[in-house]
Length: 594
Image (cartoon, rainbow, N blue to C red; front, side, top):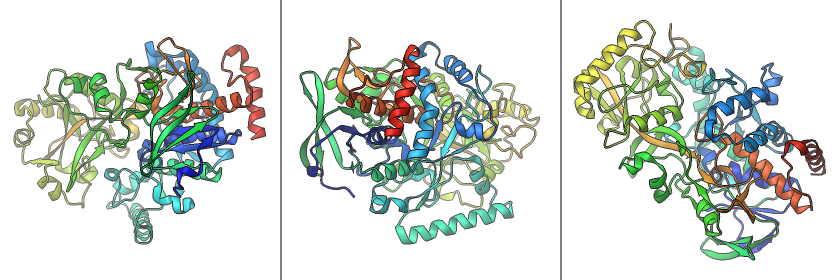
């Protein structure tokens, strides 16, 4: 329940934001002895995490070891050096690799948070240190009735990627049943049972209660916080930081229309979700917006850069430095009666018989690469155009089998989406191109050239299907290449796809343990940043499934431990190689004391 804020005006630690970053920090600090409160400006808790796939990238994790999968810290370090290139941060990356497996064990042993292994390859598995399996783990499904009355305050999943509110698990196996429901009796029974359970939940609770993916992770983190008597105040927008003699000692907050001041003995942690909807900062950071293009983000609308502004108000620095400021996601705009929803193209691009073209009618990338890689290629390929967009193209056979964007496979009807303009339909390619505003002659040539290879299961131009990751989300039953099939049976369909993001990579400058730094790289005492507020260790790249949530929870754990140790009179979390043995002993002692 959202109890009145006036009942508690002083604590040990204030956390601003109730996503994975904020809640992992709060839970860790509480387990290590601090009195913590969480402030969330939205009406619901869960942040971007609740919309996400709920996957964490944790190299050399115990789930992989238990399943006989070999990985090593050394291989992961080599991979991250390759992926982050000139932005490789030795101290931060080594801290992540040291503490990520420990963080995973801590949350699974001490809280309601649980994970299951996945079959995800790294996104660049053929790069030095890359692997085909083992580094990504997925939040276990959760029955949110365990939240009690707080179930109403959990952010619902992203509407556009549910079916009548029912969530699909991020595992490929779950989705295959839904794609095969009309072709396999086993899949039909699986889907029928899922639907029956979901409809029963809707009738009784007004929403699905058996949640998966990021919604499950957000719910499990919140449940763990409530079990530890950590209050999560929603509708609690922090207006300003309180600073005394250069030390941040609290916040001014507006909660349910009432203004309050909260004092904190050991500081304030910013975990506000980054700046995906901070229009002014985006104009400075996003090349496609600078040149007049459109950007459509599916992350919560409340991610407006509050943490960045609060840090700057007391001298903190927000660095816009990476070549790719955010985790890019190609998205389409689904028309609703009151506006539009944002659909992230997580699956369709991998399927055989679907290609992406620019307005000039040309392909520009391997469509079966990761969403981030396709997004990065898209905004660079569109430098010559007045907008940053592509069109996903397929034929009748393909859309019937896999769907296209928000359009579902057969037997679901397409007429409504065609009427609303989301889905463009043409009896032949020239007709489709004319309606979409694509160069018709070049589109015909592009599809013709693609088909010559595709009938043989090849893609000599962009090499679709050449990596284990390309193939993972494709169609394993389609031979010889699960990512490639010709586009030849009209009518033809197109969906316009824009640039979006899953969260920002650039962010507040911090130490490894989370202290916010000023222009001179001096610590602002009492102020910390975690989650997407803090600059990512990935250097603007996206190496694998869960490379946002894995570091986010790991550095939440590091920062929470660091603050708790300082509060007890210690030196904080020791990260230098020379002191690692001492650090491990301190961590173990703190762990058992809690």
